[in-house]
Every structure is written in structure tokens, then in C-alpha cells.
Length: 383
Image (cartoon, rainbow, N blue to C red; front, side):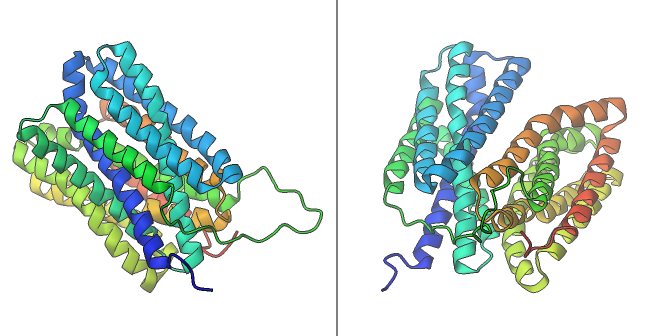
């Protein structure tokens, strides 16, 4: 009996979901300054609001993991997209700090959307036998760039930030309706437990290792996003144009690195790619920390962006196989990334204050070296 939706259609469907999630991130990131200015938020108030958003995202992830295991992928996906669109639609109506916090609590549904995308990517890989997670995450990076670019063009054309938020929210609600019928990969069944064997409540060791990989990768990403401009302009005395080019290069390098990573996995295997990624990222950070000129430091940071970009997609791919597509396992690994994004900037700032920005970048290089060590302990085919 022919399959009603062949795998290529399912691949495009998952790629669309990743791209739309990235576009939401791009819109949110670009318009955050407008929202903050409209409400007159101090840096401290904004930081607390963003911390609340991250905590709600983690709570949403953990709830979504259990829901996906009990109810399946589609209900979690539709709820996540609809919740994300709803919170964007509400942002133009925010008039006070209290109402902003209330809306950001609702943004915890982004965790449902995030988890569903990674679960579906793992399902596609297990069903097709192809390693496609890097391509899906490249779609996320491309979507984020397009979302930020489109928002900037809309603002330049005279649109208000509230209108851009509303348009993005409406588009996501339309996608939520489409997701009710969107062809999904469907999970390949995992091995059944032996007779009389009770399912363990513990996560497999490989899943915990993948969570560590994602934490280290995202902790480095978050620190670079927060402090690259300060380092290039404040310490090395670069102009705004070069600093902007270096930071933009980080994002573009991420999309490029994921495309290259997909090809490298076919030739070299996952462990070699992960280990090489950690070592190259460490080398790039060391080069940036020891550079005598802004241009050399910017090149080092771009190398970090290329090197680290395949780490998270490969970790999610390995998690899906190590746990037979368990929603709880993928949620735990995804939550490690959320925690890293929340905790890394203040910890990096404390290290920079105690020592220097150069020393803090060298500490990040050590973290990336740990990626290489951890990845070599993971066997891609083991449960």
C-alpha cells in the first residue's frame, strides 16, 4: 500500500516547522528593544523578565515531554505553535511591567513548540535512516535571519512594532491550523522491553552526555551573544561596523556550519564531527582571546560559530536514538540548553569582572575542549 505522504513531503514539513520557529525568534529578538523602550524598562527589569521567560520555557519543556509520550507529537506541536502565536499577538497590548510578565508566562508554550520540532526531527531520522537534524537546525537559523530581516524592513517602511508582532502571531496561528493536517514523520518503534522488565525512570547515560553537550554549546553561544560586541569594541577598540560584521558573522556561520556538518557526518561519523567541533571552537576562542587586532578576533569568533553549529543538532539526533524517541529524554536535553542560556551570561560576566574578558574567553575555550572529551565517550549506535 503506498504511503499517502512520502518521506520528502514529511522532510519539508519538519523543515517548515523549524524555519517558522526560527522566524519567531528573529522577530522577538529584533523587536525586544522597541518593547523595552515602550515600557521604559531598566536593564535589571528586562533581565528579570527574560529570566522568567526562560524558567517558563523550561517548565513548558518538561510538561511537553510527558505530554508527547502520552498523547503523541501532534497535540504538543499544535498547542506549542498556537501558544507561541497567541503570546506574540498579546505583546502589542502590553501596557505595564506586570502585564508583560503575565504574557511572558504564556510564552512558556514555546517549549512545547521547541520540543515537538526536535522530536519530529528525530522521528524523521529514525524512519528514513538519514541524518537530517543539521539540515533542520540550519532551517531554524535561516528562519531566524529572515524573521529579523523582515521585521527590520517592516519597521523601516513605517510599520509599528506592535503591528509586526501581530502579523507574526497571526501567521503562527494559521500554521497551527495547518499543523492539524500537516504530514508528520511518525516515530519508528523502539525496542520493546523484555518480558517482566519494568521501564526505568532513569535517563540513559548517553542522554545525560547529550544534555551536557547541549549545555556547553549553548553556554558558549549565550556568552558570545552577550559579550562579543563589548570585547571587540571595548577591549580591542574596533569600530561599530566591524563589531556588527563579526556578530552577524556568528549567525551566518551557524547556518553554514550546520550545512557543512550534515555533509561531514556522512564522511566522518558523528563522534569525529563532535570532537572536531569542540577542538575547533576551543581554537577559535583562544585565537580571539589572544588576538592583537579586532579583525583577527572577529575571524576567531566566526570560526567558533562554524565549529559549534553542528553540536546541538547532533546531540538531539543521538538523544532520539538513545531513548527511542522519548519525549521526556528530548525535553531534558532541550531544557539543558534553556538553563545554559539563562545562567551563562551572568557567570561569564562574573568571570570577566574577576579576571578579564580575555581570560573569560580562555575559560570558554576549556569548556569547548570538554565537548570533545564528552563526545568521544558516546557511541552513536548504543541505547
